[in-house]
Amino acid sequence: MRIAAGLLAIFAIGAIGFMGRLGERPAVVEALDVEQYMGLWYAVASIPTTFERACVQGTTAEYHLLANGQVKVTNTCFRADGSSFSIVGRAWIPDSFAPAKLKVSFVRLLGRWFFPGDYWVLDLAPDYRYAVVGHPQRRYSWILSRSPELPDEVLEGIFERLEAKGYDRGDFQWIDQSVHAGE
Image (cartoon, rainbow, N blue to C red; front, side, top):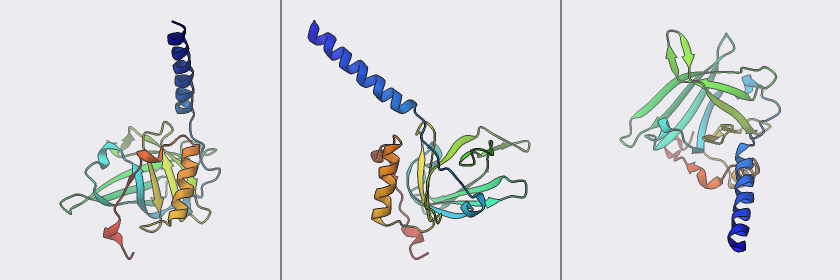
């Protein structure tokens, strides 16, 4: 009986610790220059969303700043049959005091954008050559690069910082960027 109670107590403490870690929201970068963030990014690895499941290679995201301050988002990838797939959406910063916490929507109806998702910038190179974006509950994430590949030592540093934020590197899937080789 005492052994069972002890095991239950250990399990409960472990579960509380685990749930507490999941309940913590990952820290975002302190500053984000939206204009410098614009342009083409290659997705090197990701915890994919459901709409990315048909993508087998070449995933990119392109951001274009609009006159109203919103960002046009164009995500593109290639399917197994070689055809490309693109989806266009909008991103915006709901709180000017937290510019690294964006909202993104790919559902437009009657001129309005619905069902926005959280798009938090969690890590960013000082020269904006890579960025890591994720969800506050770690449901999805992308490691983005200005080139189709990142050096191993850069990726290792990114994964170390992500693990410190509660991510598991095993949840990430590598994205084949061979279609963009030489760019």
